[in-house]
Image (cartoon, rainbow, N blue to C red):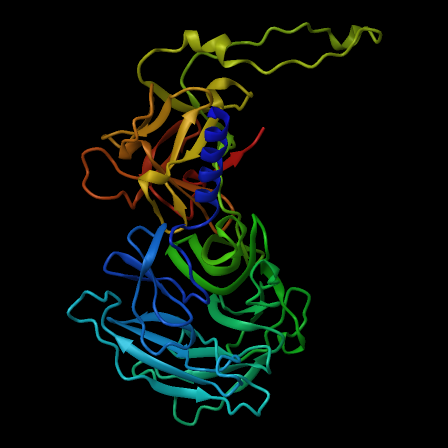
Length: 482
């Protein structure tokens, strides 16, 4: 029975890390929108999800009009919602309409909550080679102009321009075909490039859905959008961004959220979560950029690691005495070739822990040597909530309760036991370059969540807490399995 409890607990932790928790059930989610301290996303059929922390989701979004595949963007002090009223075969054909509407807030309990009358911005007649559904919005940060891509496999992906002040179609604007062989598209901009994200494959078949997310890019918002080997998306091109994995099948409906400079998250839905009965669920992944291309990062799952500073490659460790490993060593110039070669065992915790201080122990950086005082076990703490993209984590020396802790004077140390205090909980986010940012949930004596201070290598051997600097390797860390 105890073994069964252990297995179930392990599975529960794995599930909590693998997908969003709570009730994250949604199809065709909009890009994540933040409103008054909460996160919202809206899906096909009306309604949506809300989260207080970005990790635990519940029903709570309110969007009239039904239809499919909305997107939401904040412009000034208002939120613009765009959605497909029909199309996609929902009404038995491909005669679709795409509409926009405004609201001052996304909180249904606010006295300011009221959607404006929906306005049609484009349509398809069911006969042409096009289907007006699945819109995605880009507010161009370089020009202030607003663009919408839309369409499905039943024809082309098209581009239109809307007025960001009214949400209406720009007068005289003519739609332009920019891709085929995909649907549920989205547009983003970064470093002089426009990126068209499209969802390829089959949907709406649960665990048998083959959805995956692909991308092309262009120097012009109107295209042509080419992939990494020069194939035009009008000819079916597209570089892979995210496919099935981790018992999650059919990722589609890309959305991008910039949390901080160098910290980005992509949202999507998975057509089927094998661990949640094959339901369609919200997915959040780190968004990385490699050689100018977006790619989904792997969700951090914890484990036992060397925590390595990007500054110089030194390891985070307890400030304890280095204990030499005894070995039967032959000089290299007189090796006996007939003597058996035996592996040298790693140093064991029991061999050294007795020599460590009993109370708090400082931490430092040093050469990694596979020693117990350098091996950190990182485990999720689901009951502590989370942030957009992950749960909070405990960071402890392997095989012990000794835990990394933030201090009131903005330093770090290790304490003998994990108590679940906020200063012992850590936010771990993969940055766009593949390294990680590590931030304490709270600083003792300071109110509210910590949103500025990160684990920082102030020198080659000195870790501390300092403001996150996306341009400095001092703020960046790697988790290495050895």
